[in-house]
Length: 424
Image 1 (tube, rainbow, N blue to C red):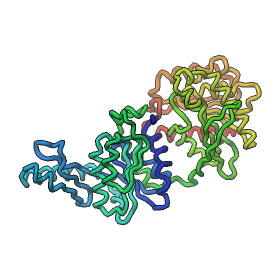
Image 2: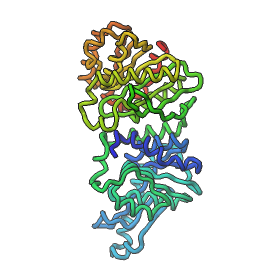
Image 3: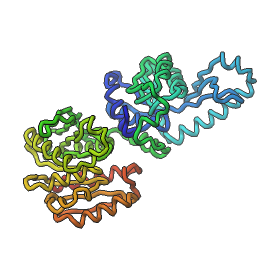
Image 4: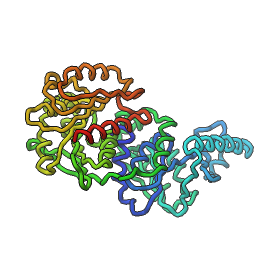
């Protein structure tokens, strides 16, 4: 199982722990990479999110051998057997513990700020990480959580080494692992994007979770099979009560209906009263051939067929939101004489790949590009000159191609929401 990034892994993991929703759990992310995975899990369960800060205690002069772990609130989990066999003096062990306590306090302040730690007494606690190789840190976290008063400890991870999963079952009440491949070598090889998580991202996600869900939280998606010219494509349809229009998402290269960025934008549109349809333009077998994601005419044809399917299901105005190569497919489909598409938004798109079809687009079109995505920005400027419809190019300052910078994706969502609200 390959994950797009940590947010995508979190979306999938959320479905696997849905059975715990009734237990009113607390979700704890291991810093740093576990927090972006834990964030969508907490949102899906309507659960509070916090960070679990633990420090392993290494035997002096043999630091890879842990003699225990410490956590917030003065929690100590010590292996007396290892302490005895290490033959370290009490002074040396105390020095290690003192140094780790200082680092523990620093990390907790850095990630959580002035907010108090969420009490775990008597609660079901879901400990989340982005993946597990040896399991040492995860085991320490679960031990600390138990010592902090948790009644039930669940470890949830997207991917892990099989032997680590077996060991961790002894430390927990339940282990939820989406994939434990026999060929496991490293966590990062199971992610398309495994870039380092910054302290700033952890702080931002924890602050957003502490602020609570946004008003008008989006309704849950309904799984559908989209009929695209006789081909069944998996999709997720959200139609808020009283929706005045529906936006169809055309995903880009290397992405799918589970794209965390498109899901973020879709949720924002749902809260504004717009329906959304996220669906896969390619079958799983077709995705294996990289050339298919650049078959723009084929993708546009499927989008057109899917649009006809949606019109039979919901008699509402329709807009397109395209990302990367999906933006080219959206513009190609919108250029058809009978398309009747109300508006198009492109996020970091490749409108140039629609070629001569650009001149035929009549739907008002918004092109959104990151200011640091210079190559794609130049391609969008050139494509904009070919458009004959109402159009606008919006540059998000400081943003790169995936809009991963703090606040960048929120700006994309706000621009898209305003564009669709105006034209649909």
